[in-house]
Image (cartoon, rainbow, N blue to C red; front, side):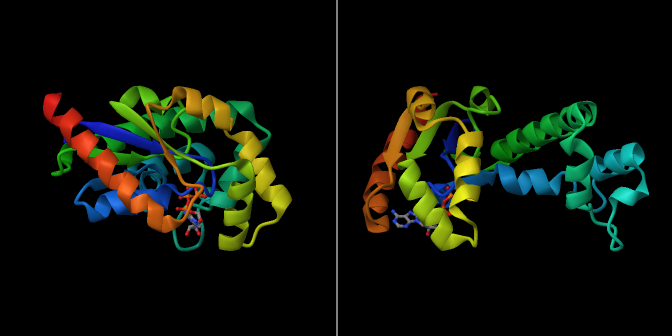
Length: 200
Ligand code: ATP
């Protein structure tokens, strides 16, 4: 596909739920989180670079990346963090764009939690925000994961604010209601994106 819709939203907003509804309509999903893991999986170019830089200590016994150790290495070290980001960000971008190109659907949905924060909105043709209040984000995340209210609050405050995201997004899907209300909204957006992608 040549037309890319970037789907974003804060923690617990409903990105996965919305993305799966697009998938049911035959639209290919490209998931930034999945790709971020793939580029450092065992045998990858990314993991080889990381091992060369940090040494074999950065691996678990089974040869996979020790993510906790890597987090530790970059946590208090800006230079190492910059090094890692300059390795991973281009790799992730390239892989995302390659998967979009290869997709057979009329357009693709690229799911990127930090689309605006990481400037990835410049890669896509259109941005779609899943919007809910911070209170609902907290409530839904806590009923899904075993996390404390404070942990969710910390994550929310590390992400762009609701107002910032609303002002940047081309399209907004309100997910404050029932899940059953989403289907209709997704179908309407799908028809809109089919039109946009056929004109591009
Ligand atoms: P994250 O970025 O944290 O992975 P996400 O944006 O992908 O989250 P989902 O996993 O889709 O969000 O939704 C968060 C939780 O809220 C899930 O348990 C999901 O089933 C639930 N949920 C999504 N939409 C609704 C809704 N409209 N009403 C009630 N629960 C919902």
